[in-house]
Image 1 (tube, rainbow, N blue to C red):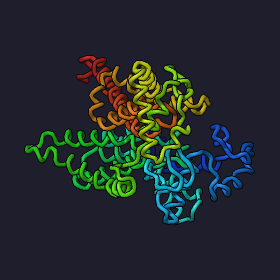
Image 2: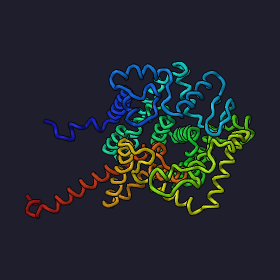
Image 3: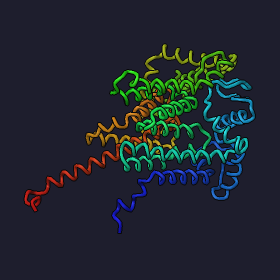
Image 4: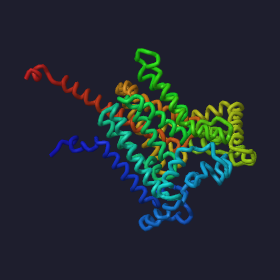
Length: 464
């Protein structure tokens, strides 16, 4: 009979976690009526009482033609249909600060374009093929997560990180819903994969980093400030090179290439809006919606849900002429709140910081949300605490990109507002961190056990 570790050698194969991740996501897709009902997703009235087994076929057939489960799905579907029809990035319906029938400047471009590409191949509104593609992309991301952790922590680190990613409940759900997280998470995994170890082709690596960051920023503008962190990491990698250009050259090429990748969207925005908008942003909307005088400084739903003195859909905002004016008005409201009630604003940020760090289910109180929050944060925090207790803090330098990304997202969430959904893009970073810390803990334990064994052997025993 094989020893226990040898029998489990398949856990240290990245393709194991690709298969597991894909199988779990397809299983959830097949049980979607029951899953959506359990997670309290707002289904259409006709689907509010699903009978799990007989409803599967009918539900999937209905999902071939879009039946939105959330408000965002309807808007993403409309943008994708307009892109396929050649009308461009246009919304005919009202969504936050957009203008019906006009080009959309303040909404992410990457994900609607991704949906449109699937629609172009399979037909507009064919959502089921979209889910299949998203599951395949998420499965490939499992390979990226495994390999990234393996590069800095060995095969054991890869196995732990791959398992953490594959079984993560919220990441599984994001693969079978029309949300931008379904591509943000794989892009984050690719970014960390590229940063985890220098490539024998440095120019190719820098260009891939630039393209990945551009896609992330165009999908969600909150990634934009991480551009400078990546540039700093590139300088840190080559800090010992002999000339100044050799030290700053990779970072310069990265920033220049990133700018070039974003330039088509910037030019498009300037031609219509006569304003320099490098990538999509709803900064004014998010700043006001998640930071306004009606919110309360507390742990719980009251910290993110409260009566807004001026609602985004209020006539005072919606009657303004265009998106730019509405965006500016909402940012002005936010800045006014910060000036008049600075301590309350700082209190909100302080509470959100701990909500971002601690395993707290903010939006939903369901068992799924609580389990997901503990799975995403509690596991990593426990591993980190054990590693520090075992004096393994030096391992943090080896996963500096992961730590910086996780810290960056925590800080962004602290400013933008807490919610289970807004934690999702950092999970690949947490997965890699968990894998590396766990492997370092186990390796340290083995060394200590070996040392204790040697110490326990007396001189006579050693002579024999």
